[in-house]
Length: 212
Image (cartoon, rainbow, N blue to C red; front, side, top):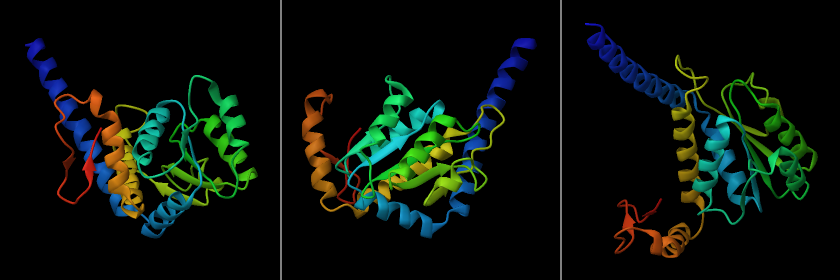
């Protein structure tokens, strides 16, 4: 019947989309430049302030990147917000050689992120790119670039693989950060009043506190 056929097609889309995500994550892992990964971790770990720029769909990924870095780094600023890109540009005027700008952009590349990367470079700020390939509009502006496979048949980009790369990056930064466990513990204590049934910190078996 037509209804049964529609159900089958939807099931196929579920399976195909999940398979695309798996392939993109595998391709990203296999093509990683680990020297670039180490350089990114070092620059983030040593930065006085970290400015993160991402717009459109990448704004959500930029927010998750800020969330992941926040427990390991003392000053992480998300530039995408209700005040718009002009306020982000003004904020970057406080950046300097001690700081890092992280741009997150994928096809179709938004000029907002590119413009902020140019401003950051003009301020002497190191530029880290999270993007899809060396031919990206952001790549020529970057001191360090991490590339992520994002091909998909269903959306402009596969965000799953980008999020996986973000989680890998923030995990590596946390491992490098001195006192990361203590910092995570302080954050957990701060948010404890809003945690349902939280009777104590959870760990993942590696002395790393887990929180959301």
